[in-house]
Length: 301
Image 1 (cartoon, helix red, strand yellow):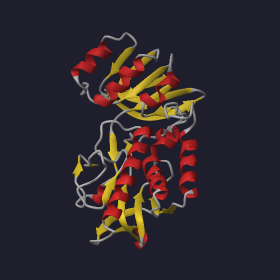
Image 2: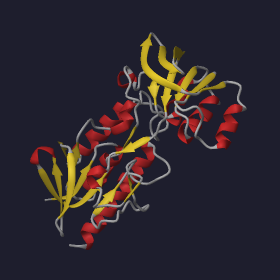
Image 3: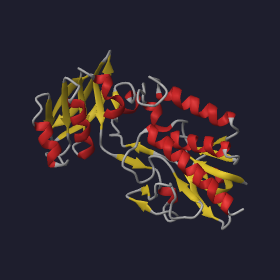
């Protein structure tokens, strides 16, 4: 029986494990994929306090090492559900494995939605990005594409237009769906253009140039750029917990203390309802959730 079971080994989950161990609680992290979550896709992080610049993979390695050195345990498992056993919880996993704990912290993150076209996955972090706040500085004075036409895409385009030499917004519908105020800002900037009714077919990279194949009203075109920002939304991975905790558009509803609607179950990071999703805010959530879980355990002992 563990004190705290943590689902997800992204920055929120790893920070939660660090705080749990420093509070003297046993902690087990269950991760189905790679350690570090979405930050491992970033080739350079320059907005994380304490480091002028480092890659997302380097930061993930440091967090994993710290958690393990403090005595946290990690298992590669895909969690399929949570069983409420009254005084404790049981995590159910693929293959029949299960783990019991006094509390659970769900830190499954949220993945950027992909277009699902050839060349895309291989170029994530190698020309294809998702966050202008994180990676926009790398494209200062360069030409970029923004894929998408909703609020998130237009916000990315506005930010990129301040430093990039040219920004082209590629939208699959025949109109933009983002707020009119954002459209007005973009239309006033001479370095921004919009292509509507465009379907992205594939990506490929030759040297430092990224080539994007699109079809516009039956005509195939190839756009060259220094980088592409895919901004078609996020997808939280919270389906296994539906029915046990309250979800809001797929995200786990939580207070600023990272508590959920289910006693003994907490949440942290991008998988929860929040307005800002950055490495720094995920770390903050991890600390808050771990301390809340510790208080919950101590109040019942």
